Length: 377
Image 1 (cartoon, rainbow, N blue to C red):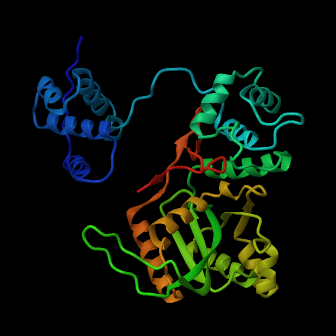
Image 2: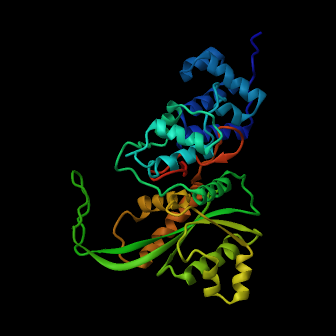
Image 3: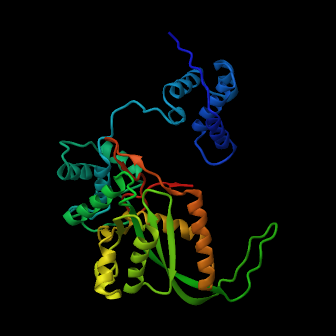
C-alpha cells in the first residue's frame, strides 16, 4: 500500500527552511528537499511538487516519509547508501597515507600499489588487500607515490604511529566541555612596508604595487583552535620565547577555559612547547597550578600537519594576511577583526564518521599527509 505522508511544519521549521533557501552555501539536494517540504506543508500535491522542484516523484515521497517518521534533519539529510563498508578504517587509511609518503623499501626506487598493499598486510590485521583498494584510498587523498616531487615523511616507526593514533583519538572523541581539545601552533609573520605608494585599481586595470618593499621586522602569531566547536583565538607577540608560550598556556586555562578542569592541547615538538617552559617563566607553584589543568599531546616529529590548527593558519594567511602590512598595530587590528568574524560565522572543522561505526575523525588531507578536514563557512 502506498502510504500518503502529510507534512505539517512548525513555524520554527518553516523559518529555518526559508532562511536556508534565502542564502548561504548548501548542497543542491538539500535545497530541493527544503523546497519539497515547504510546498508540501502549503498543500501542494506530489505531482505538482515534483514538477515545480524538478525532481522525481520518489524523491518527494521519500523526503515526506523521512520527515513524518523522523524529523526535519532526517528529511534534509542523505539516507545511508547501500554497499559494502570500506576495507580500511580511518586509522588504517591514515597509516596507508603515511607509509606511501615514507621512504620505499631497500632496493626499490618508489612505492607501488602492490608494495603498499603488502606493507599494509604486515602492519594491520588484514589477511590480504587488493591494489584497487590501495589505489582508491590514495586517489581520495590526492597522493601519487610514483611522483618524485611529493612530500616525504621520515620512516614510520612505533613512536610515529603511537603519536599519530593519540592525536586521531582526540579528534574522534565526542565534544566534552570539561575536557576540551585545543590545537595550538605559532607562525612568524614579516612586517612589509611599501617603498612607493600603490596605484589603486580602476576599470580595466588591476591594482599595481612596486616590486620593491621595505622590511620592518617580524611579529609572531600564537593561534588557538578548538577541535570540536567554532572558536579560535590569535595572539600577536613580538617573540616566541618560553615566557610567551607560558603566558599563552596560562591564558588558555584562566581566560579561555576557566571552568574546564582539564584542557588537552595538541601541539608540535618545538623546544619551547614543554612543561619546562612554564617553570622557566613562572615560580614553581604557579607553573604547577597551570600545568595541573593542562595535558599536552605532541604530534609525531616532522608531522605537525596532523595539527588541525595548521589549516586555520592557512585560512588566516589567505583571508587576512595575504598583503603587505607594515606595522604591528595594523596586524593586531586586522587579525582581531578576522577572528571576530570567523567565530561569529561559526566556521569550524567538520567531523565525519569512521567507516566502521559511530566514531568520528576529520576527513580530508592536506598536501603533506594524513588528516585535516574540510572547512565549514
